[in-house]
Image (cartoon, rainbow, N blue to C red):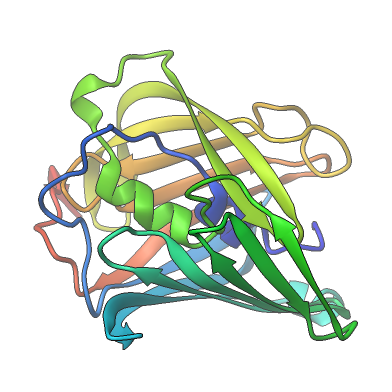
Length: 263
């Protein structure tokens, strides 16, 4: 497995596409919670991941505090134990992050990084706690982190204008670098989930081919075709084997979950 819990990276860093005009109604709210189960090569249980949202205040402004956790389970944890925690503080009005926290331990590979974003001046203050280093790095305008990206795009997603083959882009800051991601819309597909058959929107994010992924088009994402835009499934073809993550529990949805056939 990669030295990064792939399900969290995939969910947080995938770019879905958005309209120039924001949706009037938010796709999520306080108390939303997801849980995902992961399997490796279709047979072995690899771990779990969760995402949760809480509303709070920062500098007298309402913000979303999003926490993502990931950990290995079963036999895999005995030879590659993972405990990851990601946090993002996002201003509700702009959906831009002002703080990102990454605290991971992946088979002994540890990182503890805090990033404070200065959106007005397009800068990020990066505090690497493990190395005890601090630095300022220039960022792209309206930069997102790997957690805020997912929630930002859920509110900006405009499926009515997407056509099969359309590609969208977004700028993201991760660790100490700016990243540009490209994603292709593949169309609608009804998939069998833990909750029943659900109509989904299918996307193909481009990733860097090499040691981890077989090729640039190794990731596939399915999100629910409703107001929630739930992440239903992610599949990754790795250099060795494959990884799949499926949504298996949720609560606190702001809108009705559109299920075609109940299991």
